Amino acid sequence: METNNETLRQALALLLEFPQTRVEAAFEDRDGQYIVTLSSTQEGTTCHRCSRWITTRNGWSEWKTLRHLDLLGKPVYVRFRLPRYRCDCDEGPTTTQQVPWFNRRSRLTKAYEEHLLRACINSTLSDVAQKEGVSIDTLQGLLDRQIATTPAWETLASIEVIGIDEIAMKKGHRDFVAIVTAQSGDQTHILGVLKDRKKATVVDFLSRIPKRLRRTVRVLCSDLYEGFIGAAKAVFGRRVRVVADRFHVAKLYREAVDRLRKQELKRLKRTLSATQYQSLKGAMWALRKQPEDLSDEEQAVLERLFHWSPDLRDAVAFRDELTALFNRDDLSPKQAKLLFNGWSTRVKRRGLRCFDTFIRTLNLHKDDISNYFLGRHNSGFVEGLNNKIKVIKRRCYGLLNRQHLFQRLYLDLFGYSLYGRKIKGLHGVSG
Image (cartoon, rainbow, N blue to C red; front, side, top):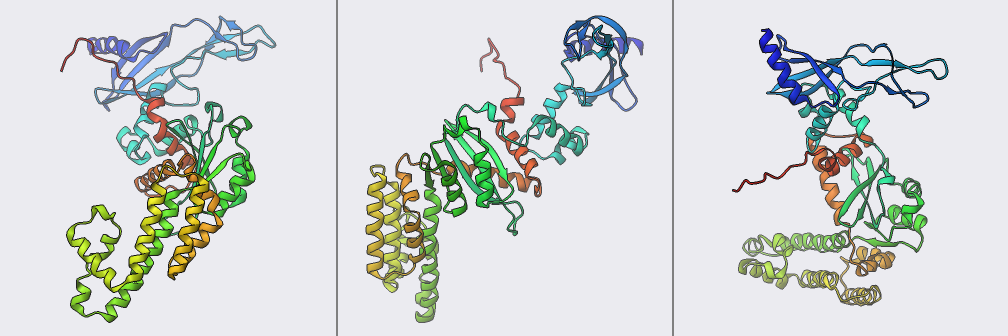
């Protein structure tokens, strides 16, 4: 048994790779865990009061046991006590030696902490806890120590584009929070998860962005919610261009056509024969497709529908006209406004009432909507982050704590760059 333990000690001495340490003993206990006793080979430490290097020994710290990376599928625990040193400054304070491979308040080695953080990326604390044999509280404590709940402003050189959107923390409830993100180059950053979407809350957050970063903001993308747009203008004034997201705008005018489609199909169901109405089956999906993507059968369905509903035919034409306008890359904001005005005039002249609500919104936010044509910014990066949030919420069966949501988003976005292992190329190997 001693021979086996000595072999194990030598093997672990090679595998642990703790700097300035020596493996004194190692054995496998009856639970199949490797227990490794370490000692420090470093002489001296830095005084915690005067910061001088001290070498006068003054006893030992208490024994500590830390969880380390598994070996051959078995848990590894390291036991050690560190030397203490006395300094001649003040009243002769003593300082326990500090080593780089663990944090004083943790019961895990730094290597094992990084392993757990990697495991938490795109996963749940519950899953990681079960796989690693640690508690959820241990994992949450690790996240609290390593992942901040507020943005690290000092790490950002600039913020070119800010995006604001809302999301419900709990499905079916109106407990909305505001998600503030930023895009700089091709990098997306999570800036904040605000407690609500009220204008005052958003104003307070935007005002707390450091001045050096506020000066770098050029564009703020948002949906048409007045709380977000009003907050942006209150904080940034005219210096920052507020852009109403084109996809939220498109959703409004497309929903107007969809409502008319429902009204017209109800009317036609009352006025047409059963056979005639059955010939309109599939009209909903055909109406939502681009004209070039329609099959011959779908085209025939639409022709029958438009024959019995001229209003719907014209509404679809106006809808597609707006979509084509947004797809143009040769328009300035001023030209876009003129085209919007012409479009609204023709809709009113035609007598279509389905676009009334959209036209009021268009007139109210015409500047913000037209700003899209200067740089063609949109909230695509915001929506991408919202999809990630929805995945996190489903994965975690709900996540109601805003700080924890911020941590999980930050870890999913940057975890691999912070804690991922670097893969070294294999020289001389061909495949």
